[in-house]
Structures are given as C-alpha cells and as structure tokens.
Image (tube, rainbow, N blue to C red; front, side, top):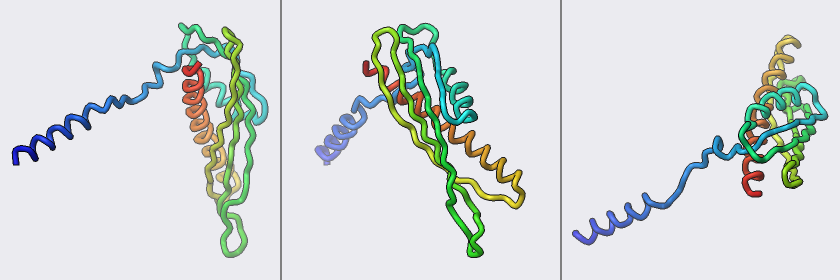
Amino acid sequence: MNTYKFIIVAIMFLLTNCGFKVVDYSKLNNFKISDIVATGENKINYKLKKSIKIISSENSEKEIIINLFSESKNSIKEKNENNVITKYKLEIKTKVNYQVLNNNKTGNFEVLVSGDYPVAKKYSKTLKNQSQIIDNLTDKISTKIKRELSNQLNDL
C-alpha cells in the first residue's frame, strides 16, 4: 500500500513538471509594419489593413513590408425542395507576401477561411447577412495573419 502511494506521488510529480508553456503572442510581435500594399477585394483589404496595422510594435528592429492579395468566392450552399436558395457559402482567400527590410528576407503564406450566411426574405437583409459574415471572416483572417507572421518572423 505504501509503494502504491509512492508510485502515484511520483507519477503526479513527473506529470505536473512537464515544462509546457502557453505561447504569449503579445511578446512575439517584435516587428514594425512600415507599409501594407493590398490588391483584390477593396472592402476586405481595407478591414485587413486596419486590423493588421494594430499589431505593429514601435520599438522593434525588424521592419517589414506586407503585400496582400484578397479574393472572395460566393457559392450556393443549400437549396430547399422548391429549388430556392436558402444559404450561401463565402470563401475568402488571402495571399500574404512579406519582406523584412533589415536583412532582405522574404516569405509568403496563404490564409483561407469560409463561412455561410442565410438568405432572408428581403434582399437588403441578405446583404446585411453577407456584410456580417465578411466582417467575421476578415477578423479570422487578420488573427491568422498575425499568428503566422509572428511564427515566421521569430524563426528568422
């Protein structure tokens, strides 16, 4: 019985001290965005530029230029038994190219997000639903871009 307790205490001691740490992304944003060049969908790019500019650290040695190319694709997701569209699917693909000015290193990655929105009885409500899903998806894209930039720039 005593050895059983000792084994349990030893296992608990080994498992609690595994060295796992949660990554703090606020400390990884050690770069300054000097310019963002965006092409493609204007509404999406405007929101992305506004959101990405916030992560820039003013006291950083790494200065980067970001090129964004965004495109969206709207497709039918569901139809009812009367062959009337009830849901649309919206996919937004953003290609990101960046260049670190201090050491002329470049990199690129792609972010793809999708979501769906319902068709309302009034067309204006459907457009409002579409606008809301665009806002949500651009927030997701900007979060993914921030994380990927942090990961790639801290590996340099």
